[in-house]
Image (cartoon, rainbow, N blue to C red; front, top):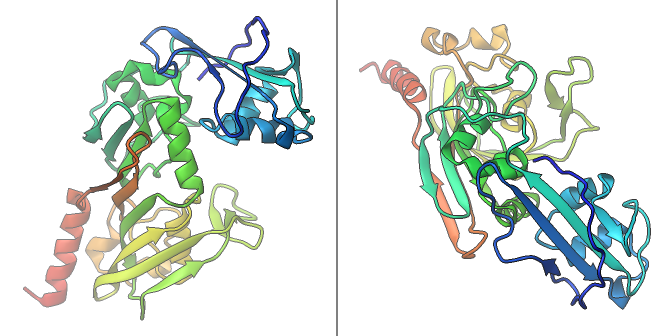
Length: 349
């Protein structure tokens, strides 16, 4: 999303109730047509009980359809004013002052292009899109992957996603991890999903084929952060962010196990790092599986070309209806094929 400062007529705010959005604009203004720009103007007057709060704190309470991080970004870009003046996030606001937000989301000036890349869509309505990502597909452009990503595919699938930050993507899977991802189709839905992720109420379950066999089911609670030496890797480090993974053994054989993993948090490489930390790295992991550990695997598992990790279940609250929704994805053909061979070797049939 491109945010552009624009001039505005700072008229007096309508009285705002505590915790409610004061929106100037028609319902559905957070949707865009392809190739157009969408102006979203919001204003609200600071009530007595918020007097003295930081601008970003007051804005987060008054405009609850938007995450605090998004509001802070708009403040930094001078898209938020207090009584017609730009202000810093840490500046206090006072009773009766008018906080006004004017953001312009352009669907035509972004650098990311729409590309005709096949998508496996499990669910779609006016608010959400759930896709089953194949292994090998990068989620969004970055260093070394300027295009050919899920984001580019989404822009081809529905052009107006260009009006949303990261085309509505709210969480990611590693390039070589397959499985379920949810994408928001409106700003309101995106904010709801971000807040659900922050509240840890989104259920994300994975299947992993790992080295060895854990003695018991368990929980790994260990902070994950950048490796102190190899900065392209993650590791369990004291300075990392809190992270928790539950795991349960489903099947096992000589040198391997199939685990069901459930995330409480969503740190980068979390499952891969956590399982490695307890001595059970994911089969095929090019970053965390050491050669010494790989040698304990059957030959077919040693040759598996990617991390054997699949996002198998996703459950969340629908942003509009409030209903609990759940989607499941079976193991992809490569992981299922590996598992079949491992189980055949284990039984001798």
